[in-house]
Image (cartoon, rainbow, N blue to C red):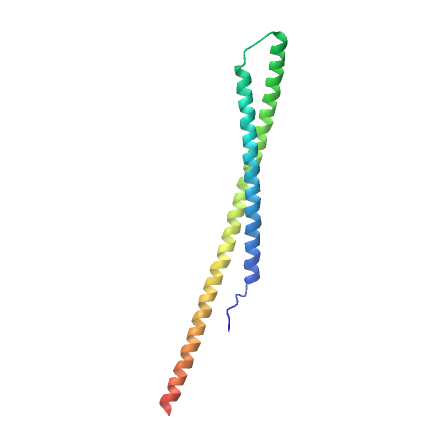
Length: 138
């Protein structure tokens, strides 16, 4: 008789939840990395603009307007990175929980398999003992 774990479907479900949460975490991390790169590019552009030489009045006005636009973009990008960082942390927490749940089920399966193996061994030993008793009784 082959071993069958009674809660195999639950374990399969826990595996699929973990896989889904892993994908969510990876997507969130990738998105965060892209937005951090964008923030870095904006920061570099802003720093470069601060170091530019001043020219005539119209050029100074253009530089000022561009710097203000960059400053606003930097502010919004920092907020976006902040929100995405929170999402990544939430996704990481969800993934950790899913892994714990799956490991609990796998440990249950291993314990159940070991219990089954011990029952089989005990049954075989009982059969051998019965055969020995029958042989001895003759």
